[in-house]
Length: 250
Ligand SMILES: C[S@@+](CC[C@H](N)C(=O)[O-])C[C@H]1O[C@@H](n2cnc3c(N)ncnc32)[C@H](O)[C@@H]1O
Image 1 (cartoon, rainbow, N blue to C red):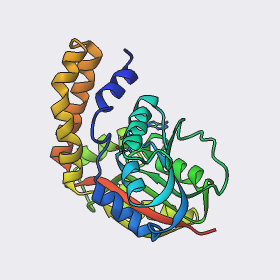
Image 2 (cartoon, rainbow, N blue to C red):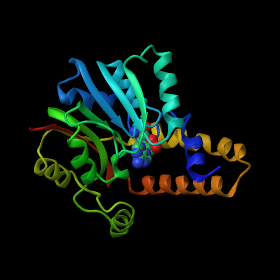
Image 3 (tube, rainbow, N blue to C red):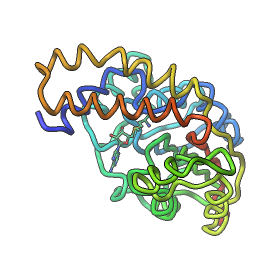
């Protein structure tokens, strides 16, 4: 198996593939003021197995297309949607987020939890704006500093990993400079990282390694996630995912 295939295998049965929670998904949805509108179209980009896609479908009457690079994740989302009788309103699309076959003004909401970093916040906002109707909403969670200052080694780490890391004010300014008006902002709480993402991850390590006979790549994947968890535990008071909810002006 390639590293990508192993990564999908590691994550596909997880409750979610990134930090977040049902409550925070609903909180962001409510900030759009659109939760009670019928006949809306949402694109959920980088949805993984769609934990939040399902939450959106269960709390609205809208049509949602879940987009991800990996069909292995989308198969899981399709099964979940079918089991819940949501298959008529939840469809999937296996495509890369930077090259989507969507038309201008096609969607009422562009949703993306913990995934826009794959193409970069600024590139993602600019590109995805085209797919939104005027008055539509972008709802994205994105790595954000939550304190005014932070240890130098932490800054250095994130500047290497993802130089777009910034405070919420920088992200909000960018949204405003690009034709959006902020409708709401909050950052994810620590339980959304630890209880909902990292603890279930730790519980899967040994079965994953056993399933792949402790292959070198499987060992490397586990090592990297253990290091990510240790990093989060050490620095969790300085960063989180910020959830940005913003309306397209025109
Ligand atoms: C951190 S996970 C978050 C998944 C999901 N939103 C969640 O919170 O459970 C990032 C997701 O982005 C997807 N992804 C990575 N690169 C992508 C790309 N170029 N186009 C579409 N999806 C991509 C991954 O497959 C993965 O499902």
